[in-house]
Length: 401
Image (tube, rainbow, N blue to C red; front, side, top):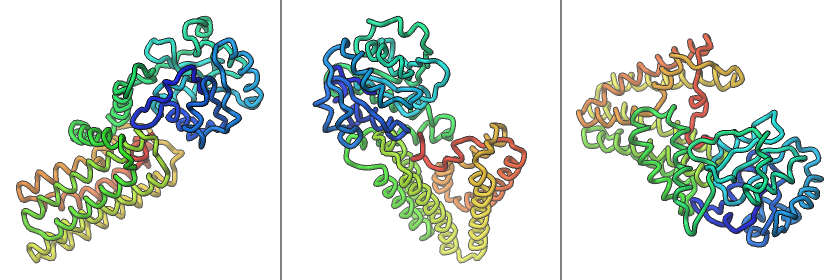
């Protein structure tokens, strides 16, 4: 249930009205029966594809909450819990799932910065008092006495205020992305790539550009880099390495943009994984072929074949030991940290550094050996239940919840 005592829910956060952000979070995470209570007319056009017309309930004061709760409860007859919030609230997916996944107490709530407002998960029997409290925060403090307080993170949820664009709320959504990725980002990704990608994402979020557009642009950039690498020569290798680094940075943009604009999709996730693998194959093939073109030494072709064999072996181990057995979750450990280090894409920075000194052949040799080491360590880790981080199974930034 979404309360609309005022029109704050019309305020846009990264180009999306706040009330639509909440409705999208609900509908995409299992809440199909969405009701809007309060000032309904301004919100009907915004939610026409998410909320049925009969589920808009006009109300002008808190005294009408008892009657409305009684009417709505009939449609919630089979529901064990009801999610209730105000339209002028901003929250990310992680905090939303944290609250809606709570069990036990009749009422659980996540407060919005000490304002008395927030999000509630309650039994249908407690619906009326929760609605009254949210309609006029502070008028029903007794509702919170036995309620379970769930702490949010990254300053979310937060209540929108003032006129115009709320950059504070947008900043908190960005902080939430940083918090979710800091444990899986490599050193350079965390301190350089993520800052650049977020700078791009926050600006693209205000445009009609979609995450899949960014994915295709990044893939095109990576393939262009592979073409330069395949030509051989110092300048071509340097340009190719820089283009690949740009591709890696842009690869973070599509996932961030999907989160900011709530445009995550299964198709986008698959597209991201496919294009990533195509670009990686092209980059390493281009690097090996470029050295062969440059030197005529067949040893580089053999080295390239060895590298591609290592990639295939690593992919097979990931498929048979992780993807086919996702329910056998592995505990974190030293091998997990080692595998995460090997699988993050900070190596793009190493490529650029080696290209500057004209020693990309070192990278080719190291990558060929590293692919087999990765496959072997991963096999040992999965056999010993040593642990794989959830991020390694995700395989794609666009798949971040």
